[in-house]
Length: 318
Ligand code: DGY
Image (cartoon, rainbow, N blue to C red; front, top):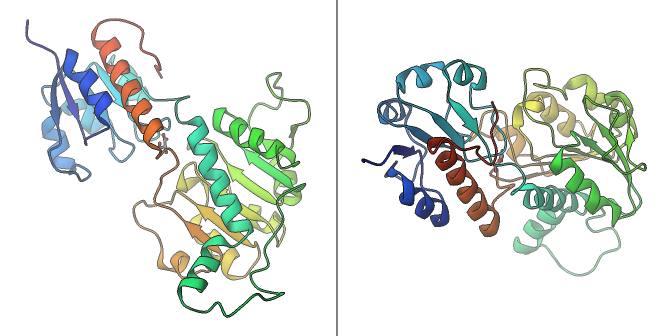
């Protein structure tokens, strides 16, 4: 019996590829670049499964081009790049990689929070530029973290992991999300409406999925609610924040700083953002640890294998 065929849109860590090889005839985008749209449309024509990235748009056109497709295995927890409803209508199972990247992403949110609070990147550049001439009482004064208030938008797995770390810093935790009644959260975590969270938090960290409801959830009005000393962290998805409004708020010092791992039009990052000293910018590396990417690769492989073998996959979305 010939093996089923899978197309992998870009090389992923070896443990995942090795596992796929056991079951599939594996075809991979040979270049180590995001695959061109036309090449992707052609590559999916005769495959049974697709292992794709958050940079691949799995929309109606693509699904229609893939007549044999039974599974879309997304190498990410976020799945705003996949038209899940249309896939469901075509009996295609869609899977993602939740859980395995929770702690790494929470770590990175904290790395950004600390870097912004204590102006780590700015100070590093200053030193490398040869400007450090000795200890100064007023050099790079930042903001304390211990004992401050952290507002978390989206209290799913990653939001909770960020909150757990905040407990070590003696922080008060406010959170906002669509389901205020939650018996799985410590009583000390306080749900608030978005306005209260913006007004009362010293640090705000976004951990919500990108949906049509929360596109530009934080715009001009919400940024204006924030304290002038507030620091905004986004490791979720860029379009949750109105990037132009954020740039304006940072330029006018309406908020103090932002730490961003995600952007509205990735990989494009507005020059105005790059020109600001009070931002830390990262190239979407929230889950980028060796261990986590290996686990994501294995999970994405197991998802595709289970679907093809008629079993329940580890993380099915539809
Ligand atoms: C995700 O999984 O959604 C991240 O953005 C990449 O790991």
